Length: 309
Image (cartoon, rainbow, N blue to C red; front, side, top):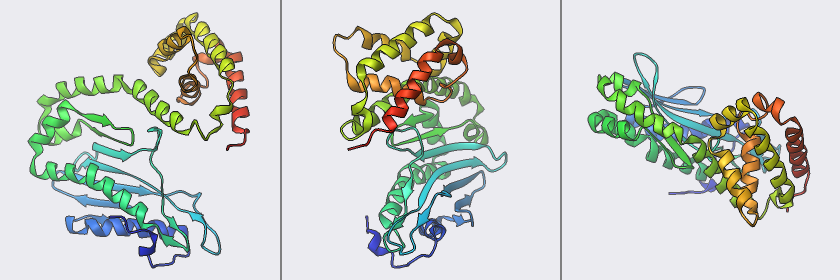
């Protein structure tokens, strides 16, 4: 149930107090399970084989106006299961942003200097969906959980993801399951570039009608990306780097070039993918497409300086 910010009657003086109030609210709901809240915002419960943690963090960019009517208090968190003996991570689940590329940031501030309980309820719903069932299965149905984790060791749902790690099997004494686990996690990881591309495409399509992407010259972008493709294909090191870092990027560009009509969302996706994937600013590309990189930076600067509607 969502209660709205009116439910929080407390008025706070500092953003840190609002963040800790959210941590205490979530911690209170988990107290009967044995979770305890630390001063830094981490909730922890220790069991015989595992340590269960919800690591909540905030931002030094938080602020609150003197009249308490405006402000911003960030919270993000991840859910973890660690092997108690080795301290190694056995499970992680995390809520993601709309692009699926970064943690979801909750804004806990409510006008008047209060705690936004709607955001707390969203966070709690995620914990109930992605973390508490895993804890219950570890404690009551470990064999069944291991079978599922072996077959599907990770999932990426866009708005959230999870991954199981080998320490889960090792702590349970089920090393014989690891070869199958390794094959399945390798298959999952091999599809990571395409999943990231789809996240970006969904995000870009969602902001096209209200963002500065509409001001981008698609014909210019198409010509630029075509030159990039041709230069990369002519350099063995850059080609190997591209295939490793960007997955099917070159084949996507080839497909778009062959189309009789230009699809704005798809071309912008290729541009944004190239400019925002880690490692795309240097290394093999600096020597192969220096002019194109300069043109990309100029194009992005022009976009960022365009007023949004």
